[in-house]
Picture 1 (cartoon, rainbow, N blue to C red):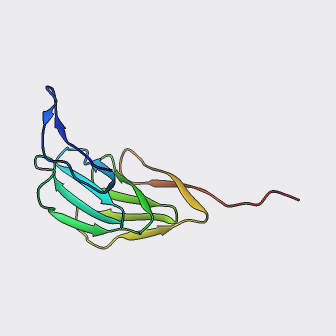
Picture 2 (cartoon, helix red, strand yellow; picture 1 turned 180 degrees about the horizontal axis):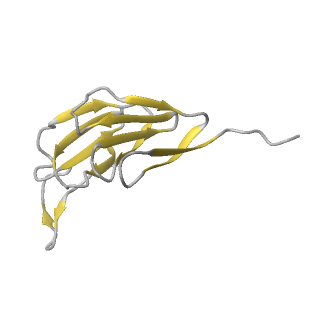
Picture 3 (cartoon, rainbow, N blue to C red; picture 1 turned 135 degrees about the vertical axis):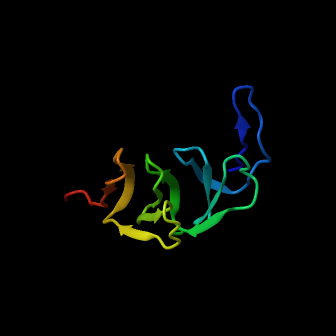
Length: 129
């Protein structure tokens, strides 16, 4: 999916478009925009120059399809069907904490104070015979 960035309020183009982006997320302070490509690679760029070079990169699980910042911006989560990779971007930690789930991760949310992460998973169940 190609992504283009536009600047409000007059919606003028803010940068060239990025290609092969599976998902993207702005940090709550609007300082960073992170993009997830089709191979689980995450690039964190300055929101003022989103098509510029990545300030930091992270590697998520291959099946990651969603990026999510916590409300206070300390955590960045990459959600895949097998679980969640979680980075403490406030500290600059490059290694994720991996949260594995039984079944398929379907919904993820942070508490407003960044202290909790909730992951809902759908388990594969066969119909009773």
